[in-house]
Each structure stands twice: as C-alpha cells, then as structure tokens.
Image (cartoon, helix red, strand yellow):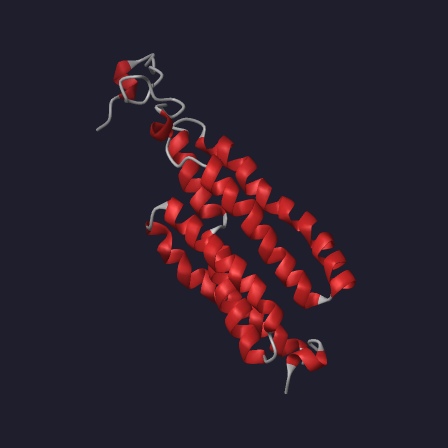
Length: 185
C-alpha cells in the first residue's frame, strides 16, 4: 500500500516506529565520534540534505524507515552537539563548560524551525517541505561549516583560551595555608 496515496494515514504506531529507528541509528552511530569532528560534520551534512530531499519521494513504509530512519538519523547524529563540543574543547582550555552552554542551547533554538516547516507543509505539502528543508541544510550548513568553522585555533595561528604562548596551560597558583594539613598519607 502506498504511503503517498494515504498521505501518512497509516497507523501512528508504524510511523512512530520511524522515529524509533531514527534514534536507534543515532545511538549506534554515536560510536563514530572517535573520527575527527570536521569529517563527521561533512558526512552529516552530506547524509542529511540528500536524505531529506529523497524523503519527498517516499511511497512505502519501508522507504520511510530507510530514508528518514537511517539517512536523516545518521546525518542528524553527525551534525549534533557532540562534534561541536569537541571543537569547542580545542578552542577553550579554561571555561569549557561555560562555552559549551550556548552551543547546547543553540540546539534548542532549532525548535523555532518547526513552525516554519509546518508552514511549508501547509503551503506546498510534505514532499516539497522535505525538499526545502534539505536545500536549506545545503545552502546554510555546508557554507557555514566550510567557510567559518575552524576546528583548532592553531589553524589560524592562535592558541586556545587559557594557554600561554609556550603552549602550556596557564594555571593559577594555589596557596596552601597549612602545608602539614594539606599533606596526604
């Protein structure tokens, strides 16, 4: 039975299984984070954008599982917060937690795109909305990552925040008030 002819009027359980498959793929692929962040981001964009665009051609539940569950799930995993957190760790020796907070918060800002996607769906239907989202991924994420993102400060001749010119981290001295009390057994 064709999904397109039903416009996703299959049971909620079957379509919700797609999101479950998407999350399973994300968990399985999280082991890839030993690869360099730059490579993961490129793979993610190159999986996510075509996956979203190909979702417009979904006609069966199996295609929905494969395209959205696997391609979109894999792409979303590769461009999620973990690669960016690894990049921030290269840039900041001190205050790593403070610098990762805005990055994690930025993921939440993506929820503002949901009404835009819903608007696209009501104007053009879900197939063209998927194409539009895939094209937006290509024209926004690909250039931003290629042109602006630098994975290590050394690429620009800089040092990470908190690292001196000698390349060693600047450490604040600790003054011990009572050396006898601070000794360990």
